[in-house]
Amino acid sequence: MKKQKALIIIKPDAVERGLSGTITKRFERVGLTIIGLKFQKANSATVIAHYPSTDVWFEKVGQRTLKNYMAKGIDPKRVFKTDNAVAIGKQVKQWLVTYFQESPVLIMAIEGYECIEIIRKLSGNTIPVLAAPGTIRGDFSHDSIELANEAMRPMRNAIHASDTIEDGEKEVALWFTPEELFSYERADEKIMFP
Amino acid sequence: MENSQKKKLPKNYSELLIHYNRYNGYNDYNNYTYYMNSERTLIIIKPDAVKRGLIGTIIETFEKPGLKLLAAKMVQPEADVIKNHYPGNDPKWITEIGNKTIASFKQAGADVQKIMGTADPLKLGKHVYDRLIKYWQEGPIVVMVFEGPNAVVVARKLRGHTVPALAEPGTLHAAYSYDSSTLSFSLDRVVKTFIHASGSIEEAEREIHYWFKGVKFENYKRETDDLYLI
Image 1 (cartoon, chains in turn cyan, purple):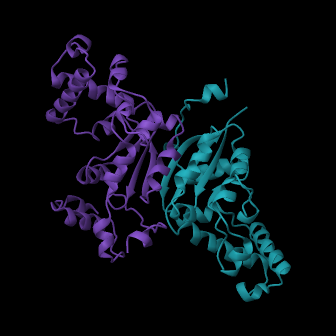
Image 2 (cartoon, rainbow over the protein chains, first blue to last red):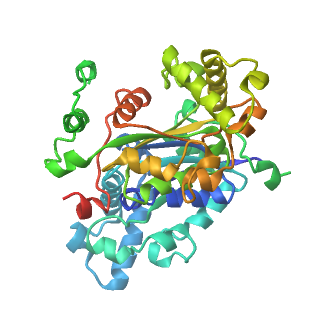
């Protein structure tokens, strides 16, 4: 079995609360290896490239918001001045870019067997109110879609964690140059994987 | 940036702080208290701690009292880069290292001449310096800058005594290592002092400029800032 790579970003809400180390610890203690790490303000172009810019993605994001508004009986036009899913998706992406740049962020490339599944499990549901206790988002964040939409901002969910094996590869390559990535063996590696 | 780097550093403590805040573009923080209280320190997590998965634990320890992470990067530098972190070209400094070695042998009741083949501080210092560089090269390291009132003292206190076996309980060096001079000398290596923390404000500024040359640190607000800094 080959090791997988994943990108973890500790987002501004967690950085500003001084949770960078506490969250990083959780990925280290399961045995994953941090092969790249930097703390800096995210560059606009990188954040824009980080999220898809296809109409399919905008539509998906927009529809999710519309569905939520419908359930709550809120008129989307009141917030977005439109009820077009793609236009709403674009607005949400703009919010995300602003959120990512609110403070510097801790960007990490993480490697390990079944890395993607493990980091997703540790991170918990992307919507903090739905994230289980014991997960990073369940333990360290509190936000909901309703609250975020009401305040016209993206949901603050402490971390980004790559979604799929392909995303992991792609995102690590987007945020790190090959010179910023290292290969080393953890002290407990042979105990975990003899 | 280039010009301000060439400028002579102010001597006086408060001038020094104001100088560095201005230098790093902190003019938007027009708060005198903030200027007066901000201080920076350089922390390096060395290869053994990285391999033990202690990066998060170490960052957490410095974040908890409210110190603000300003910069961090994982690097695996060439020997020369590590050598220049220390004043290795200064025979005085090398001799001092040698003298420290002699002192720790004496403390352990061991004969320096017999074990090391010399009792000359300069020769001993060079021997230790070589092994120190070797230690730093065992794997990637994480170099960081933390900022906050009394950052240098606070960080040093949390790290504890340089020699882990002598570190006070509750400090990182005590909690995560049993290494001592006797053990390290018997294995012909240096004591694995897995966290470097600057020793003084001047040293911190020199080291920060060395490891983060030309980097403009982005400021942001920690949750503790408005409780203690205004």
